[in-house]
Length: 412
Image (tube, rainbow, N blue to C red):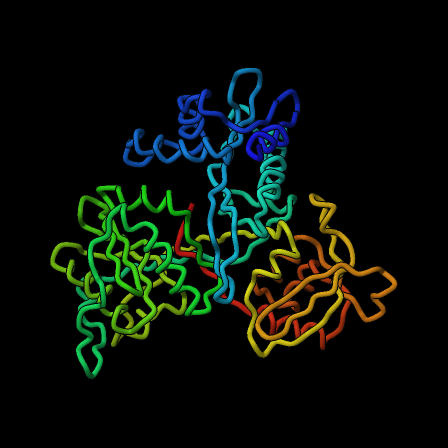
C-alpha cells in the first residue's frame, strides 16, 4: 500500500512532463539509452550487470522518471543506505543517476524531478539524503549543501611493503577469508561495527541486497574478517589495483588487510585506494608513500530535522540548549522555532512557540542546517550567509557539538 501511495504521490507535471515512479513494465531500454546519452558509454559495457542492479530499485519504486508523453526524458533514483555520524547509524537516501536528456535541458525538468524525488525520500522516512553533484545550483536550491569529501590516493605498489611493523608480528586476522554473496549480511554488520567503533562521520553502507550483488561480481575481490573488510578490483589491464574499501577495528586486522594489498606489488605498478583523511595507513608507513590525487565533494540534505538530530551521535562532553529558527523553502514543515538540546552523546530537536524563544536564537536556512549537521564551523557559515543571530558563546557550543571531518568511501 505504501509503495502504491508513493507512486501516486510522486506524480507531478512540469512544462508538459509527467513525473512518476518507474515500473517493471516500462523496461530498461529507454533508461539505458538515457543513461548513455547523459553520462557517456557504460564503463565495461556490461549491460546485463547494469540491468540487474536497476531491477530492485525499480521494483521498490526508488527510481523516478520524467515522461513527455511516452518518451522518457529524465530519471533519478536513490539508494537505501545507512550513514554514520559520530559513530551512530542514520538512515540515508543516496541520490544517484540524475540524468536529463541533452535536448531536454533548460526547461526545468531536472528541478521538478528532484523536487518529486525529495518528496518520495521524505515519505519513506529518511532523516537525511546525500548526493555527489555534477552541478550545484539545482541541488542547493532544494536544500542540499556541501558536507564532506571522498578521497583517493595513489601508492607505489612496492612502497606498501615498507609499512611499519609492530614489535610483535600482526599474524592472521581473525576469520579472514574471501567473501561471497552469502556473506552480505555479515559484511554489512562488520562495516557498521567498524564505523561505530571509530566514531566516524560520513561513511555509508548500502542495503544487504546491493552488497550481495557486489559480492557476486566476478571482477570484485572482497576479503572479510571478524572486524574488517577489504574490497578491491583490477584496473588498466592489471597494472593498477583499485581498493574500494579497507577498514578494520583493530591494528592486527588493519595490517592483515593492507598486507593483502601489498602482496600484489610484483604484479601491479600502483595501488589506488579510497581512504579517510585519518586512515591508519598514513601512520603505518615509515615514509610518505602516497599522495591524495583525487577528491570528490558530496552534498547532504537534512530531510527530517527531528529524526536527523535524534539519530546522530555527539561528543559525550557536549552540553547545550539553543534555540534555532529554521527556514526551508522546499519543506515547509521544517520551518519554525526549535529548541536544540545536546547532552550525554545524544541530541533532540523540539518545536517551541515563538514566545518561548526569549533567549538569543540562531537563524539558519536548510542549507545552513545541512552544513552545521556535517560539522562546518559556525563562523564559516556566518561568512557564507547561511547563519545569522545568536552570539559567540552559542557558536562555540555548536562547534563543539557538531565538530566533524566527514568523508565517504563509497561513490554513487
